[in-house]
Amino acid sequence: EYFQQVFSLHRRAIRKTMGGQSRGESTTSGTSLVRTIDALMQCSLLMNADLTTESVLRRIMEEAKTLLGAEVASVFLLDAERQELFSTVNSTGGELRIPVSVGIAGHVARSGEPLVVHDAYTDCRFDRSVDARTGFRT
Image (cartoon, rainbow, N blue to C red; front, top):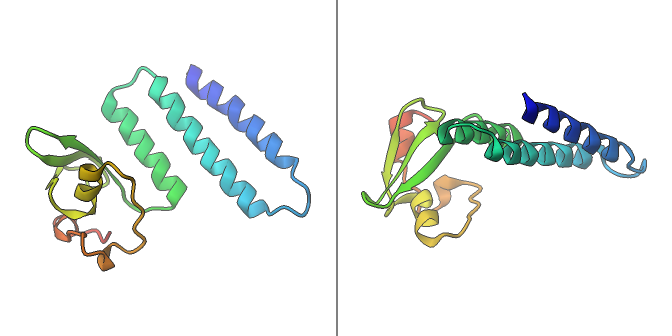
């Protein structure tokens, strides 16, 4: 596949560049940077590939899981007509729907601002109902 060949060439160039680090530089941070750039490039190539939206989102989700070391993940989209966030691209295999008015994901959808929450269970916006339905702990 053309995109995989392009991706492989870019990956080799990044690794070659990172291999030129001075001995004093941290290889851990270099490895992390390479992984991050790899994931971003893979996602960029996917956006230009002739794939369905769902398959692109699924592959981006898998890249994000790998990059973050996450066991599970979900990609939520906004159904503005029903005022719900829905996900068919997730680690549960089924469709998830949550009102846009609740939870951290709902807050992000309403505000349009990205948000990092290190411990969802300590955040007052967190809605535990998705964890209860899926059996996963956020």
